[in-house]
Length: 111
Image (cartoon, rainbow, N blue to C red; front, side, top):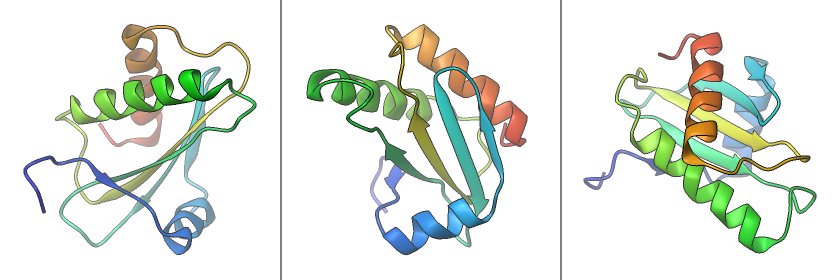
């Protein structure tokens, strides 16, 4: 593993396993699914539909979510986490994204 603790979740089978665990929380901006993995680190999967906005908006949301997850040292290790951006009003600042994700991670018991 590299120096960066943020590892991507890429395989469809891994996504399906997390979705089938049915451990989720949602708010106005995001839906977060989580499942335990057998690894000592967390893996992050992102799903941002074209309904959310154009490529510029989707990439900005992706960068904000990755940065929020990277800066959260209090997340317990060994989880696969999928963040799905909801359509509607896209988050406009780091503070909104960070607060929203913190709330959802607390609901799931990951922090």
